[in-house]
Length: 604
Image 1 (tube, rainbow, N blue to C red):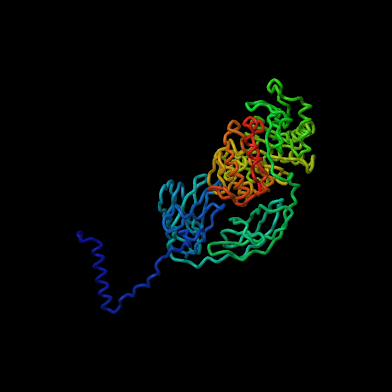
Image 2: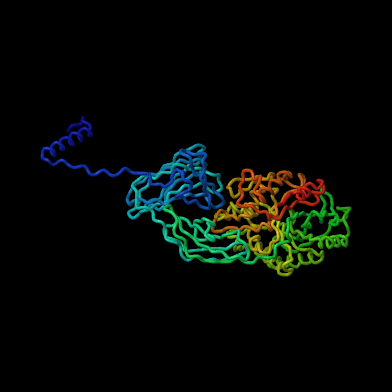
């Protein structure tokens, strides 16, 4: 046996001898026909044509011109709340075939993968790519697979990532077909400013476009949507089209629905809202009701507080003379309230505040709340109620995940209590709310404890209350102070103290937003006359003081779309109701700077 000759050499000699033998016999084998070279099957994988061919969850993706890996375009996608910013594309493939998927990415926790392969779905990821990094994976399709979904996504709560030059190399399959028009379109859940829609899924669709009166109103990945920003008592025509990488289907049959009538708007014109330190003293000093300047249209008496956190029993008393030596008598206080009302001033009892934790965890507490608040309103001759629940007054139980149908007793009981007060006092009853950004705008990213638990259960906890009372709500003035950085609708974080923060936070209220990034759970926009911006009156009043010049920029942008800076609003609202401040006392202490700036503003 030959132990020295290399096996490969013996095989090559054998092959040569065999070929020679076949040639001599006229039996030369004909080589099989060559397959066409594998090609890149992605449509717009370099994002040179924007997001054409791509579908991104929760509107999380956007085309950018910088940074790019090559060419002039790339994808930038931002996770928010329970959405991981997945952008995907359906691609036609052949069965029993091998494919290579690649993409260049930047960012932290960026994923690339393929699903629907018919074998083992694949993905790859990078924990950190501060500069462009290539991700690559391969897969084989199953015996009956004719299409796969290629995707890239980030991770929950992380910063934006970029992707560019996505390629899928392998034999091409039959072209993806445009879906048929959706069927079963129905309308439900109409409010004074929004209408809910749902429809049956269309085969092959990766997304849907909703049309209102022939114009595009929304793009969603699921089979439902809420169209917001509508006028009260108005009829609208809706259609929906299915989309995928091949294009858009014909529109569905038209469904017509009308918004509800809403309630009588508050008095016309713009308003200045202020809190009056009526039950306590601090460094701002005590201000008598009769001495409150006429600049203030809404005067919120701070504060009515509960006898205990869960009693629902609200009490209000004037500041004691030992604490406020200049306090007026109870009779003079009530007389001053009555004297202001003929001029259109509204005086409210504000419930809660920083120290007044109110948790209506039982129906007994709910009923006590209604009776005790009624006693205050009647006893002082007030025009209504302001809800200033802070701290741990509102939080959502685990599993309470839809702001439209809350199940947490403290939230449900509060809604029922406010509806009872509205029903008791009728259309002239003034209802305002002063939540912190944590309880409202943070709901764009996070809602309650989240789908997997672990989040702060107070995230977005005011949203079900606002939504349930939106047709009775006179004013919402979110406290744009004492706040952390909050993500706006541009998927960028904004910090208090300048016009940018107030513009972004107010734009969210006037545009509406998907709660926790879920486009099937849209918080509808409020009317402009229902929205005021909450600000501290001076540097002593709270963190996030904003200079008069920045306040003016804020109003210019929101009411005139001028001086907007980097943030681009989704509309212009000359009917924005006005400003709220903590507080009337601190404004007087600061020489009236806040109210004077408001009075001087050229609204038209």
